[in-house]
Image (cartoon, rainbow, N blue to C red; front, side):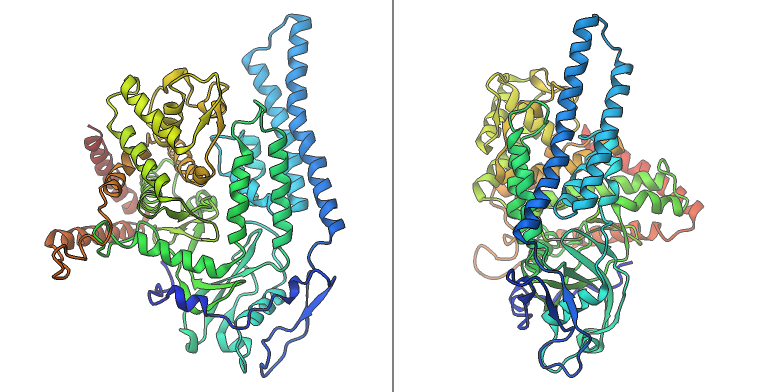
Length: 585
């Protein structure tokens, strides 16, 4: 269960004023070593001095860039070399390899490239960890040799010493006269997770600060300059090979957008405000009335947030990246009714959350990967790490809503009028295709991205991203404003493919898109049109009770004994499949 009651009293204004002792002296680039004590100025006791790691020098930055380039370029070129070798061999011998022989050769190539990339990321860490997370979460885009080799990077990074991180906490949160123990009754030495930007520790607040279990997110000292240099290297590499057919996407655009998003990840004050904004979106229905959120979100603790430290609710569970391992430990088979029911719940929860955030407000979590999605002990879905968020403009959001409706309302996948309408909207979003792309190309891209249930794409395109005839290959560029929207939709699409559930985001998002276009904002039921006050309708109350009871039943199933749980889950799964079949008619 979630072990801490959400702090619903947190407010953005209080969070912005939460730390008056923020100290950035360790960022001083003129100093090679900086020391700091583990208490704030004026504290009654002082811990032993802690030495902060200095920022990278110019020479170190050049050395880091050189190591990246010396490792990355040979990996990319090895694919060109292997392809040329096979072509020359076929031309001289006249012998064409069978599909099985070609697959064996390329599997060996992938294995060698994946191992070299993993070794490079292990050595360099930094933003390259983020790249590994993206690759590891995209089993439908990258060869299995790469996703498997990089899967350990999802949420396992070498942790920093706890004394160093306590010093950062003390610098930022302690006020005059306080010591560390005035805030924390307990503080675990072992981290819950260590990522490229920050490290998280479980703690318990003292009675003065709420007496509850929390997670404390602490930024790694001197990390900002290192990560920004890393993404500059990735951008340059992607730009060098931007016009190459070997890459399935315009990765330069992707990394350019991630560069802007990464800058916000270093400000935990902004992250706390983002958590509150998204919480407000998902806990209110289309009429502005309270509803049960499809996911569980940690809430920031008022007064304990700074630019480098974020204290928030603690969620008891495991990341999605370790869910299979946890199910095996509990004796749950991947093909069991419990696993299938959970898969559908996960798919539904992520679809609802991202659909509402993207189409209703345009403000959404922009870093979804298996390390940030949690499976809680009571079976609910948790979402953490709001360091990367995205706000898309009103015009783009409106056009995106029109795309969802055009896809959902089309008569067929080949109707020329429908394809023209969908294609024009895709072009309006800023999608650009190669000059030789067929007229159906823009519509094919939209269908590929937002409708995983489609059997055949128009224009003769293949559904597989790795296929030479994929619509992704026809993309000349993708609008930066929508890169992270695409990342969210592709995550859900990849999940539905793994679960073997045909899933159309356009169909699921269409009701929300329709309300957004009709101007049915969340205040419509709260603010009466005649100015006489608010009206709460009985059907809204019944809807809220129905949603609440459904959630209670779902959580109750997880607490049943194993044999009974399997039977109950089987019945629930059959009912859900029947409901899905009725809705599909």
